[in-house]
Length: 426
Image: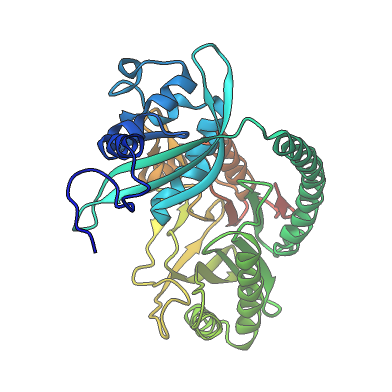
């Protein structure tokens, strides 16, 4: 074996020439930086915020820019067209963050003369020894010859437009179906309670989703009436299923044992057992019993994590009816519920509501409307009949505009000053 030193190639003596020695010498002297700069594809490195830290001559030539125009001045997205930026922000960048690398993504880059160049881009995130990201290295391939891609893109856009049209038609049909389903979760109209007046209102925050608020009023026997109002956690079909289960459970429980605490306890057991595994479901609720006695009505109710009821007196203060200690219904295997009692005289009204009312956003600071503001508003009402109270509260809800972003249910029960008028739903 012949042992040699120096830059020449390890070729047999008979094949070595001055020309081959010079060629191999030039190859060995060719630097990595020169290969980087004149590569047939574009290279650039960016900081984690996208600022270009290094770019090769090939890509600069494609862009029609100088190194001083780009390095430290532009971000990677500044090199893209508007469509390219949108795709980068919504698809490319999230994939890169999740996977650490993205290969062969088609984008368009902007050229200095106003043209655009279709390219394929691959990026990889470089990290230090502790796994912290340091920079992003990107390779850019010229993809000018992609007529088939453009044609496919056009076809996909046409397909997408047709899909959008069909989706809009489906959305209209869905809204109609949701309206029918929503109405099935509420009483078609409130019954007329002898010696009393009742009124209700339901505000839907969005026609595209089912709400979780519910209420009902129904007879227990020939002299007592039960009522409830509540709010199921969540929206949509799952919440609607819980709402339906809740309404029928409370109705059945009331007929078996009308005690408010017993009714909520039964509901708590049913909800917890039904949704103990998987996605937990629970609700807030107020359940009560009305018992007319001469010119007055005795009200006994219990609350499970629900906002307190308001009592509006014709000849007295407007105040909340405290129901302390009630937990959310269905969240625990067993939950303590305590009852409260009040008596309504002529002109008095009991108002039940869901938290969409008190959690509405008001003013420039978008602050919660809150319990105190509701009490102050109710105190100003000169007519405390149920129908007038609901009308006033409906006007208040409408005044919130887009600050009211949750469904809201109202149920007012009172003793009229004169002969009872029919129940109303506004």
